[in-house]
Image (cartoon, rainbow over all chains, first blue to last red; front, side, top):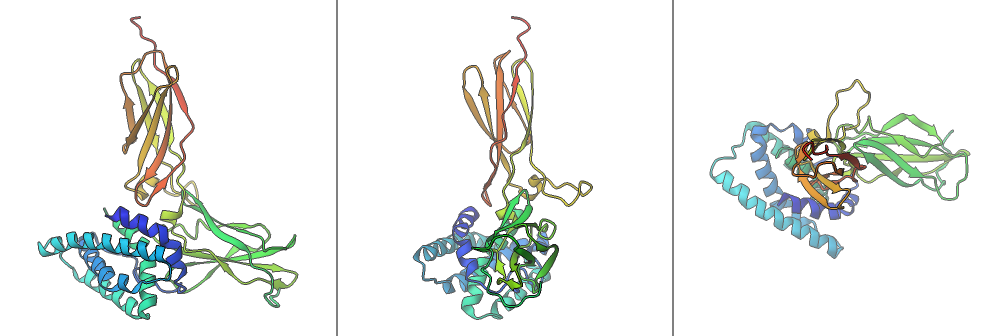
Length: 139
Length: 215
């Protein structure tokens, strides 16, 4: 659940964010904050973002710290279970994607591909609280 | 003071202390430096390119700087940085970790007001307000910021020392079936499940139920 993801991330937040020296770029927030996403597009962006983290981010987040690695894999597992639920919504067409959310997700991918894969993955992982804050606010 | 070369030790433990989103940057003086050290402060919004100087915290000798105004958008995240100067020498900039006002603030206890009848007490709980620049500015309750905000309430019978606990989300709680003419003390705490935040308990507010008129 999101609460499990939040507590897992809180345990490693300082460690992961300290590995990201780039202050001037955000994967999720550039150029516009997630909070600007229209409520009608929220399900679609959430669906895309959970796929993004599972398919692109977690696999590139290995560290030399076994405790951090364990936390990352438990976060990844929680993402997988939420992703499955979101997939069902998507299949039942309850999660339509408007043009704005498609554009927003494209921008996120551009931000991600603008960095080398390890930096991009660690930065994305360090921005999990941006995603969680947005998810919880819009619950 | 001109910056000759930066061999001064760095300020230490540069961090935000935040209560109800009043966000104040704190630090400790560089090791081994006595009086006379002054500081400059700058901050940046995470994901935005530039550092911004804080003029009111330029060449100050205190070791804190209120950045509440600059960090008031709790949907953004921030870094702040401090540089020390002494006798023409300077330190490097020393940064905070990434500061997220939403998850890194401490929440103050709720306000509690109580009233009573013969056999019940009514408790009204009010969440603190988010910090604001001036009294004229619109107030934002932390209830609006944290939709999942709840209250833990403790009610103590002063005579029997029996205590009840309640966990509520609405702001009014009526405790029925109490003893007439008895003192009860109420204390309350705020908690948010995600992100996990928990205030200290408020002070105790005591009130007596009215005496039984028929007795």
